[in-house]
Length: 319
Length: 319
Image (cartoon, rainbow over the protein chains, first blue to last red):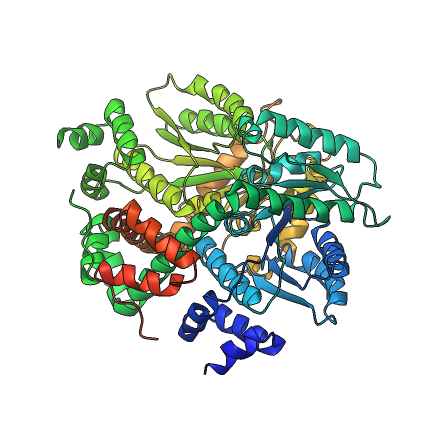
């Protein structure tokens, strides 16, 4: 039983893969193992990479990993896959390109489905990061499509958030979930060999100047251009990631972020446990009877919620 | 105290406005009033209108309201405003156009900020719909920008979801949160006087044909074109909304949706109460001590979460 924890700490890839499967299947034992791993989880640099579909995120991540390997880092990648029938297929193609890295023992890539509640995804991503960190991977890159609240929440666990925009997608910048733009630490204009790259960079620069909060703090958000075709700009983005980490450390912001992160993780674990308790204590027949009573107007949802809380031993606020 | 409930049931606009303010400020008394209103909340047709920024949603909603007034309906509108500095300004301009309707005593318009947790927004939108319904408004239109998880959750409380796309925004269709496309009941191609409207309609038609689940059920999703400039297509969309409601009623799907909605509302109320209880029982000093212990590796988040649950009287699952 302890075996998996020890093997994972020794850097055994199969133990890590198994642990991630336990996390995804929400096996109760996973939390016991993760509690033990927590002490050893280390201080991996968590890098979030996000942007609209088609911005070239997966290609960029592949190049970041290559550059980081060149610098002797052991790199982890968590790719969040939206499991929608509308976008699933296209993304899968990009991900296949990333697979060329899979033969390297110092690279660990894992895809996770983004089904389920936003909180649930953020929570299991946090667990996967903890397991990868304990196995010695640093940095760990999280890649998401930046359009959903779930993805925004996942990005909150990153130290450094890279937002990718492609030229000619001017309106796409508007379409990216606003919350993502607000947490960007580095902007990348990808496909800079295409026309419109300078225009996209100018547009991002204007967006930054619109936000007065940007001027606070010690970090100036860079807007960098990359070209996968010409293999340009990658070194500069990886340099910027490392510089951002250094600024976070020096300014004390890293410690602050870690504390906020810990707090929201504990809250998510509490809410998750309450949902489980609710499922366990209220049978389907009981639910149906309650819902029927609410639908007919005989009961109301507020008093039913209060009753369920009392049934679980919790008292609702005095009103 | 009871006064506000009675006045609201009598259709007093100021009582309704006051109730919505109570809901938004999360005053505990609001739930007591809403519990009483629940019985009278009636069966208003809830219509969701969503789409990417710039698709012309607010203009369309204004025209829907005019057409519904023409048909003697008393119409409520809840406009969810993303409070991001990046998009807030542009949307505000659109909303001002909607204000021309505000002089009509049989139209009630209210904006709500989309800050806060996705669950929180869905829950307070549900409360606002309940209050508007009790005051006699039917249908009630909810307008959101379809890019965030919060907005997707809000759309789940609608009976009829209208997704708006503008021509020449082909890629925007991809950028709309996939979850929104999946719950669309009616597609509208707005600005049909512009070139590319037929192409946008064809693209939507293709997206629909890709999704095998679409073929189930008694409703065929129409793709309708509107032009605000030429004042065309509005009657057809409003007809389609009413037809959709009729199909939902006949097929028994309306009752099913209502039951699902009630269940998720009760769950959201439970989780909300747990978050409140947590805030009340754990002081800032206690939080800071716990977070410090977790950060140093002395404690782990899993055992801390378990301890907090026990402190609130809840036992976590046996693991």
